[in-house]
Length: 115
Image (cartoon, rainbow, N blue to C red; front, side, top):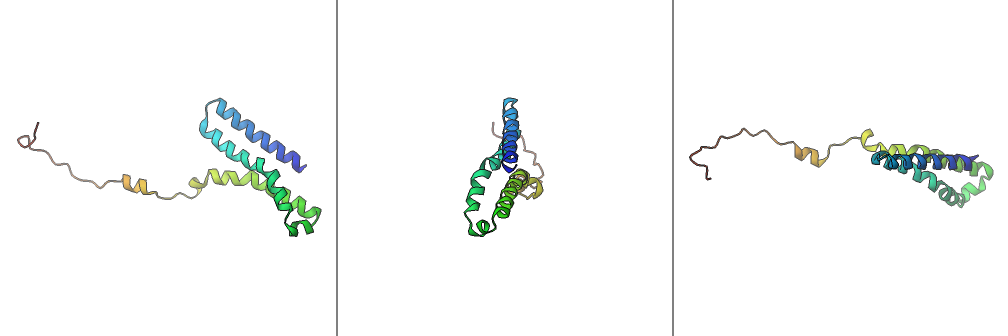
C-alpha cells in the first residue's frame, strides 16, 4: 500500500507539472515540480533510513512507521517550502532602499540653465 501511495503521489504531481508547462504556466509548473521531487526521493531516502540500527531493531513496525512518515513528509514539506516567504515575510534591503525621502523640487532659474 505504501508503494502504491508513493507511486500515485509521484505520478499525480508530475502529471500536473507537465500539464502546467504545456499550457505555459511556468510558476505553477515550478511549484508542482517541487512537490514531485520528494516523492521521487522517498524510495532512496527510506532505504537509507532502514540502515539505522534503531529502526532495524523495531522490525516491521519500525519499517512501516518510517515509510509512512517519509511519505507524509513528501506530501506536506514542499508546500511549506513553496509558501515560506508568504508565511514569514521580511523586509528586504531592496525594498528599504526603494523608499526615497521626499525632497522638495527646486525650480531652475532659466538664466542659469546651460543649453
